[in-house]
Figure 1: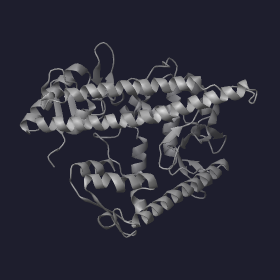
Figure 2: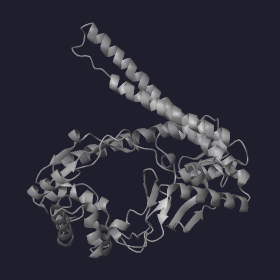
Figure 3: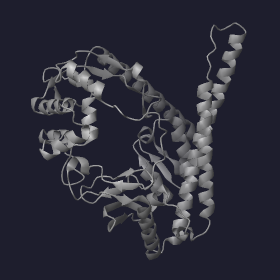
Amino acid sequence: MRKLFEDAKNEKFDCVVVKDFSRFGRDYIEVGYYLEQIFPFLGIRFISINDNYDSASYQGNTSDFEMNFKNLLYDLYSKDLSQKVKTALSTKKENGQYVSANAPFGYEKSMDDRHMLVICEDEAKVVQKIFSLTLQGLTSFQIAKKLNQENVSTPTEFKIRKGKTSRKPKGDKFYWNNSVICSILRNPVYAGDIQYSKTEKEQVGGRNIIKSKTEWKIIKNHHVPIITRKDFEKVQKNRGKGRSKGKEKESRHPLVGRTVCGCCKRSLRIKKGLNPYFTCHNRYVTGLEGCVNKVNVMFLEQVVLFRLEEYLEEQNLTEEAAYRYKDALIGKRTNLLQDMRQVKREYNKMKKEHYESYQLYSFGEQPEFNSLYANIEEKQKIIHKLQEQIFQIDEQINRAESDKFIMALDVELTSEILELYIDKIVIYDEEEIEISWKNVLQ
């Protein structure tokens, strides 16, 4: 959908055709907003085959009422169906049935009962080895490196051999990494237990939100374990020691996610400090000597800016870059304003509930005062942070007023610039850096 609207803004098409309204969306308010506001503003014609709807013929006509009514029905149907499916799955889980589409590594679904797990011997041996090495004192990094050196098949390679997937590796092969090792070590399924109800959705089509661990549900001794409960619990006690807690989440560097190791083709990670640098995290587990060791962040920023300046001049895109960059900033500012309005609504609602609870308590109509002060304070912090981000974007927009802003010495490398023109940055070392450009002329 994001690609669709990006192409619409760039005037790559002038008509959208769908089977029916529900194929475009089932939130009737959002669908109506696009049909009545966004698409007409962009000059896009919208046709729904089964609904016999064509915006070129019915815009502003009484048929709009029928269209809105159908969208409302689609929305209600979607929510009703979602609730029924959710209730049915929840009942099956509570009755001890395994309902996930895929069996966890080390297990497979029983041929006699697809809601039951049975041990997959070849995969189980790898799981047992991982737990055994952990009990011997090896870290997840050391285990991943050892498995790679011994050419032990990864979970994905097992699936490929069994015809369950057809994925291809980013580099020359699939590698074990510490994240996979950690996910196996903390999964209670290997002790014979099934854990469920860990996430929930706020609304139909929304994102999954992780619940508090106290709300998670577990069925003990659901299936035959691969690891003894004693060994599993021993591993859990020793995991995560020395990990720092309570650190505030730091802002993401714009180059993170766009830099790739020239050797193993995996994404690079940033190491922060007095002299931050990019490094290939996988070299610790793959053992490949050609993986990136250190590339200074400030040096890389200057290289990318210099190459970007050259590219824009070669393609005669300097003036266009100013407009595209400014447009991206305005779009980001709009999104932040929407977020802030939502948070302010929640903030005002909490203040009202806090005050009403205090009144009821003070008049003796309520046994306890349900204070929301901590939540209100947290919302205030979020609002302040969003205001700061909007202020920073306003400054960037002001700097972008000049058509030559890309050339300015004080320009900062931003995610907006990278998103517009750079696909990825392949790094071998500080002497060899390749930039893959997006084809913005299409």
